[in-house]
Image 1 (cartoon, helix red, strand yellow):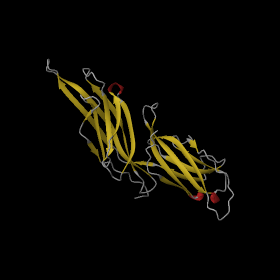
Image 2: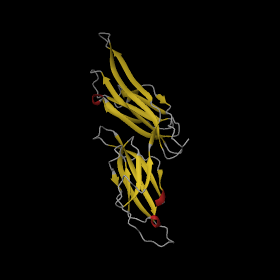
Image 3: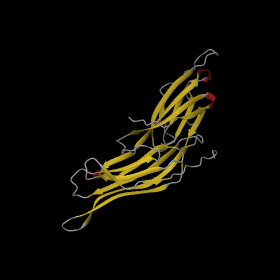
Length: 267
């Protein structure tokens, strides 16, 4: 499993005086239409002197706010320590969320319901303006005998792209999202297996990232969610297998300048 960790964000569960980095990442789930799912790992460090009740760390990672996604494996149990000691209790919870879902975290007393937590912090992904993405790799050829033009390759990606930010402060990482459909056609005269691909990367990125499918397995719905530097441009391209085995030809790269959303109260 490739966790592809995003930068940690701090959770401030104030009256429990905890510092809880939330790590985001990615993992492929082939059973769910090859949609990428995000991994949420919440690490909780609580000074033991602050824990006056049995407590659990809950995290909710679903748009369905009535669904409790996971409960931390460790349960904090009302520790007794000397005043001079500075101890912490370590607990980690990991669950799976949809790539575009926000994160809720709370510390609650034993027996409390999720709907009324004692300490509560919400993380919301604020969405910026969408941009249309329309990419096309088209190759035509001509039959020698009939002198008739025909389509040899036609690979298209149509969708939208936008930026998002977590509402945790002006230093929150900028997230870019791409959602659309990859569709492809190739001439029946092609004897070798044919594959279509859509590639993306940040302007500063050294390597391209790809989603690749056999032509006969398209159309495919694509959902991409990753991080970038502040105001960094995103590059995209589509392509298909060339005449040379295991190589690809592509359309011209397109550049997208995605505008970060304005987070209320954090101008």
